[in-house]
Length: 427
Ligand code: DGY
Image 1 (cartoon, helix red, strand yellow):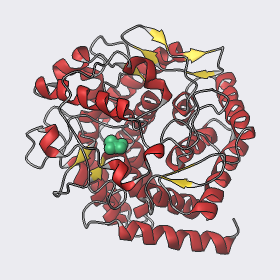
Image 2: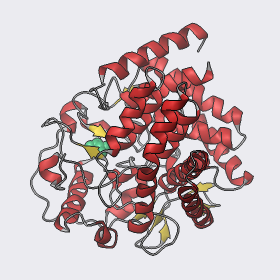
Image 3: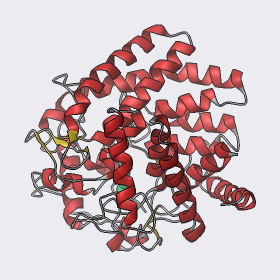
Image 4: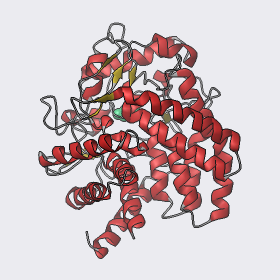
């Protein structure tokens, strides 16, 4: 993309961000997702900062205003009534003053806070805002290890596929077979009123998503009990890598801002997690795999989750080069990268949500990681591929890696935010 095209891409991205701005938070897209989502919002702040730094800080402050007393930051905040989305607050029934869901999402928050702080134009504002949020980020990270790693292994499990952000990934297929569907209350999906069903999870997935939700609701959303009570407990390398990177960014930020105790706690968590992480490596696949915590087996599913560990600089040079090699090999089978699942796997589906399509936010996390691992050429290819997709199909939620077609919701906020970030940071 040349300079002029980049400037035009930024303007188009800014228009999407403005369109979905609801004042103190941003919705992912109209219709399909009418509330505030956790990791959407944090990544959106990276785009918003190029329009208005104070507004970018406000985005994460609004999310954290709805943190639970136990430290969890919920995956959805239902700021308004809108029956265009299912399941809404009357299904979750978490009892929060402003209704929220009862599970969490990938903790990109501290990574975002560090970047907002370190690259701020208004340094004084950034210092104040970041300092005000440090304890909350630390509380969330402590919650993860207390509630999602009760045996102290060093790695956290997700207890619902929605927590991963990669809702219907092939990674969860086996573990989901363990989730029953009896007793699921009758429900009507709304997502397929906005997006064609072939691009969304199957009904069999939704039945199990709902069964888990009901199980946790029956336990009063008591996070001290949910982990052990869930038949779905998976250690996702992508999710853990995001937590490790955010914890290490939190440590650096806390040190800079004069909070050595927070920094020391975060560093200790990172050190323990890094050691445990290497148990997720698979020589056979040349990448990381999920660990099913119930069966204690690695899951034979080569997905993007197993490439994301570069985001936290995990593994040694051999591991990191192997991941760059996987990305290259996957790209050879598709027109656009990075597919969310190995295209050579017979279970790969190029249009179905997280079972194959390209997600620009993941591309951006992977590219950032490749640079950290001194693999700048590989990073540049991932970034260029992302911009090529925008040129081809606009700001979609996700893309078919083979055809380049835009899929899911349109005018999508975090896609726009990543483009704004990519174009402005490279300028
Ligand atoms: C959905 O409803 O599709 C979301 O991904 C769950 O957060």
